[in-house]
Image (tube, rainbow, N blue to C red; front, side, top):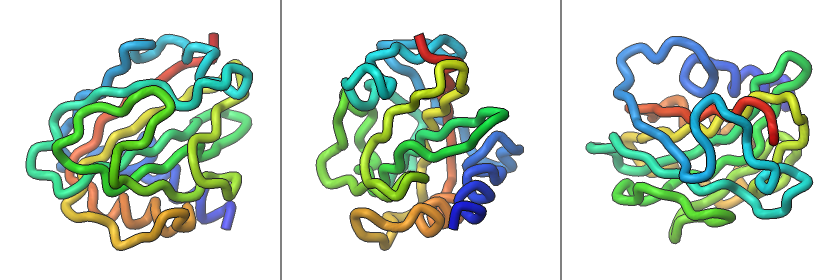
Length: 165
């Protein structure tokens, strides 16, 4: 399953490849800017959980998903998958999951935010607008969740943290 996970997280929609005809979502955080370090409080040494995120540009979506992964030369991992977020939701609180949303497994097989540890990593917080709600249960397997997100993405936006403070 690891090979499938890495292949899925590196594909064009979930990874850094071409976006094709996808609309663009604007993604930001009040705690860091694109290309700046992730505040250490959101790392495995910090204990605050996920950073807050804000987004716009999901008009027409039936649901929203968020995938947090790293794209490092030495490793690749999915740290968090949240899906079936209400399409009217435009922000995610610190250490929070929007009401009604579900979480899938990460690369480590755990459900929920797994804080990154690699100080010199590149961490991507990607928001996807989907054309449907995913027919998956809480704790769904990573490969299945990533495939469903990829199959239903109509817009995508990303905020990248380079390194950890």
